[in-house]
Image (cartoon, rainbow, N blue to C red; front, side):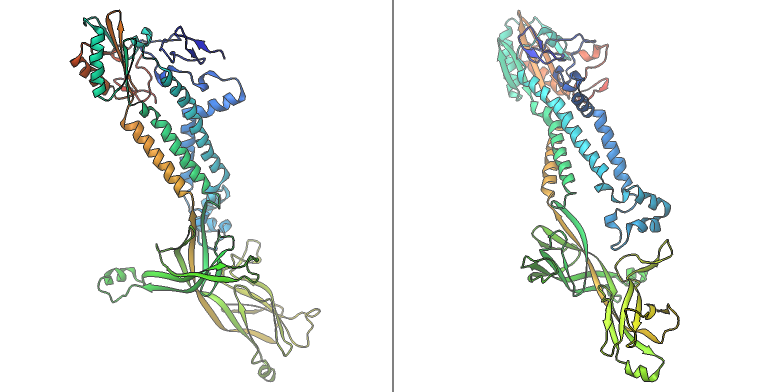
Length: 563
């Protein structure tokens, strides 16, 4: 669109209300006061509305749109706190069934709608991105024209500009107007104004940097949002759980198989019930109270470049006792003690028995041990006996289809289906003796068996739960938060004030504008008036029939104006 050239020679963008240079009104407006919102300059969103890009720009430049995005984010975030997120449900639980079993129909609906993993969902991330885009476009739509107008403003302003300021007065009381303006200059310099002179006229300005406070605030918030979004990238943020059994070595998540952790020992200490200091509280508890739980761990590092688990060579890096709030740290990773499980089933030992006494003596030494974490599927003996595991259910239950299944791979309720072959049977063609065996369970499946597989021993282990955490977004969040606070302070505790004094044919014209805190500006005028024959301007907002002007952050008798 064509630009508008003012009589002062300055070329203004289309849609400008007040000339950026001299301040002459370029459009007819209702009311006595000038529209000083963003210095009366043209904003892109108010002038360009035809193309598809213009419509996108105008949509995100709207403050109302930004507020609605924030409202939607708040509503979504509150929904995510109704039930625990998936990362916080007990380890090993299947979220598909957990929410329904724990919270009923609402829990099932919560899971089906995807609220169990809300903060990592694509639509939640899209809302955060939309908020960031809105902040960027809102800021650019306002800060660019505002900066241009403040940078190009002249000392000598158009009479129409001065008359329509909220603080304005003119008087012909001074014999030497130039001398009185010089006196006013000295007063304003003492009050830390930056003063510019042009053809005997004066512009005193103070606190312009406060006008950039909201935009500095936006920059900090944008950086903070970027840091928050980066937390969903594994290279930037890791928050995982690992369960490590005593004597076991597991790879540490997020290290690409380079680091391992070995649980050398785990133990729990309880408060002494005989301790007088805690006796009353312990009696009320009615059960032993944990004082501390600790993992004696060894950090291991892979020394070869082979695949994990295939001839992996490990070297010890360091040993450390891991307690609550005393993590093991290395290369930006921290391993926190968060949970434990005592006496988890580890191994079952079985013996083969029969009612035939002679045969029973022959097979009396036939024992085998099943590792409940990684069981062998076949057990063969020298005398020709053979046992195969047909099915293994570490955490047995009957699913909705009425068939055996396992909730997870943790051996909390193990069931094993064995098939036993005697020396005179052919495993390829014959059907062996089938049994379903678990804790306090031993059932024959295909009729009466001549042999019985009986559990004779079991082993248990303690298991520790550690959180693996690495957060490279903390510096970004700190920088964003610091910039946000700087902008907040900058825009809240300072304000932009300007005073214009002009000699118009021996008559002194005085006008002033502030983006807020008009009382401070009035005090400055009163200080000038005491030292020079400069009139104290009246507040024209008192007589403004059309209502107060819309300026950034202004508060007046009619209430706060739009920001």
